[in-house]
Amino acid sequence: VTRPTRRFGALLGLVALTSAGCLPTPATDEGRATADLYRVFFAGGVIVAGIVWVLATVAMLRFRRRDDRLPDQVHGNQRLELVWTAVPLLTVLVLFALTYVTLQTVDATSPQPGVRIHVTAFRWQWQFDYTDDGVSIVGLPGTQPEMVVPVGEPIHITLDAADVIHAFSVPQFLFKRDAIPGHTNTFDFLVNTPGTYPGYCAEFCGVQHAQMLFNVRGVSPADYDQWLATQRAASPSAAASP
Ligand SMILES: [Cu+2]
Image (cartoon, rainbow, N blue to C red; front, side, top):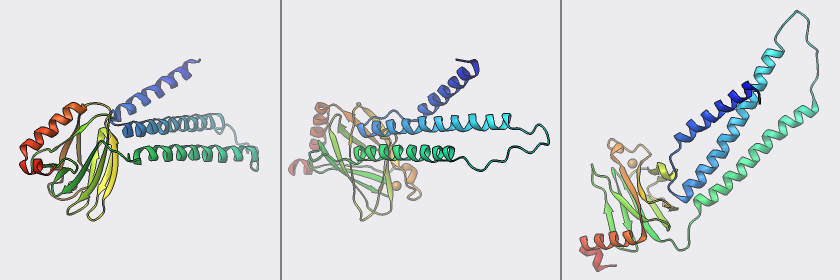
């Protein structure tokens, strides 16, 4: 390996490392699928950029004007044209197929989710209704409501908005979905790592938009059951209608 090649490799590695650092560590299975896809796209982008830079540099240095002689006049090159049409086409088709497969993973819903939560976005907070358990978490202005979920179980979300369009976004899930009045969006996620993951409204919705913060906390199923029991005990109406 020559020195320039080694240096170029090191540069590519550095670029890959810095941009990989920009991506939040995915906390859900769906987020992991998205991150894997992103890595493929990024590697593809780096390879294409490398080819373009190298070819452009070679063309500039090797074919720069040296005298007043007219260069060889040529008309086309069928083989070359076929290659530069087929390779990008194939690349795009492969990326399209991979995206399609990933989309199926991200959009898949489980027939038997562990928990069902109805999320309502409103100006300017969030409400989490645990429909099967009669527990309701309502965010007050200036607070950050917490959506507690068990890890390792599919969570089914139905997402609504009460007034204007909001968006449910959790960076570490690598996921964002609009909350639209009169249109219920549904999605599943499976948190695979216990922890607290900050979320926010990602659609400008008025003066207090920036206050629409919440957390998703993934806990063990045992801790989740305990949390649920505490919530029910705290809310007598919920306990009466399980
Ligand atoms: Cu909002």
